[in-house]
Image (cartoon, rainbow over all chains, first blue to last red; front, side):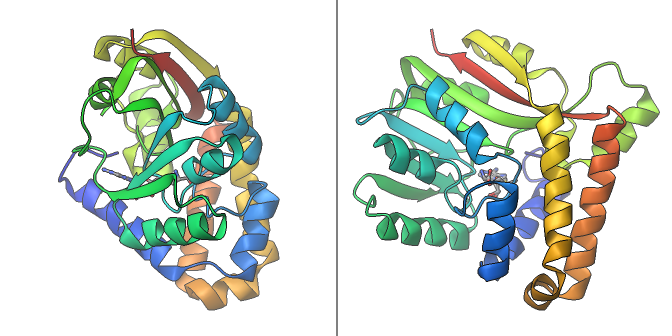
Length: 141
Length: 125
Ligand SMILES: C[S@@+](CC[C@H](N)C(=O)[O-])C[C@H]1O[C@@H](n2cnc3c(N)ncnc32)[C@H](O)[C@@H]1O
C-alpha cells in the first residue's frame, strides 16, 4: 500500500476499481487457470500451490476465523474457506470485487461462513482478538 | 497495518502473507528503477522481518518466492498474448498493451535482481 491519501494510493485504488469493474469471461478464466492454477479471480502472483502453503502454515480448519485483507474477489480467503472449512471475512475497497466474491461464495455454498467487509486495510472495523489468522497477498509493501 | 493485524489476532494467532519488495543493498539508481518497475506500493523502508518484529510479532519467518514471481509474471505475459484478441475486446487495446508493458518491465527488474517476492509468517505472542 502506498502512504495513505497520497496521489499514488488514489491511483492504485482507481486502477483496481477499473480492473474489477471489467469482470471476468472465458478468456480471463483460461488465463487464470494457466497462470495461477485456479479460477477464483486472482489478481496477483499467488499460485494455487502457494495458497495451499498459506492455508497450511495458518493451520486452518473448521472453526478457524480467517481475515483476508485486500482480498479482491476472494483470492485466497474464499478459496481457503472452501478448502479448509474455516470461517472467512473478505475485505477490500472496490465494491465490485467484493460482490464477485460474495456471488462465488453463494455458488460454492459457503456464504454462511464467508462474509465481506468494505474497508481500508488502514482502518479496520473489527474488535481486538477477533481472528485466529490473517492473510493478505500482494497488498502490503 | 501490521500493528492493527496484531491487535485483531487472538493471542498465538498467526499471520501469513505474500509481499513484493525491493532487494536489499541497491544503489540509489537501482532503487529508483526497481520502484518504478514494481507495483506502486513497493518502496518500503525496512525489511518485513524487521517491521513485523517492531510491530510485536514473534516467530517471524521469511521464505523467498522470487523465482516463482519471475515465472508467474512471465506466465501472465505469455497467457495474455495467447488470448490477445478476446482480451483486447474485453479490456480495450490500450489497456492490454499497457498491462503487458508493465509486466515486461517488472520481469526485467526481477531478472536484474531489483524486485523480490516473499512469504512472511509470524505469530502474536
Ligand atoms: C494485487 S491485488 C491482490 C488481490 C488478491 N489478494 C490476489 O492475490 O489476487 C491488491 C489488492 O489490494 C487492495 N488494496 C490496496 N490498498 C488497499 C487498502 N488500503 N485497503 C484495502 N485493500 C487495499 C486492492 O484493492 C486489490 O484488491
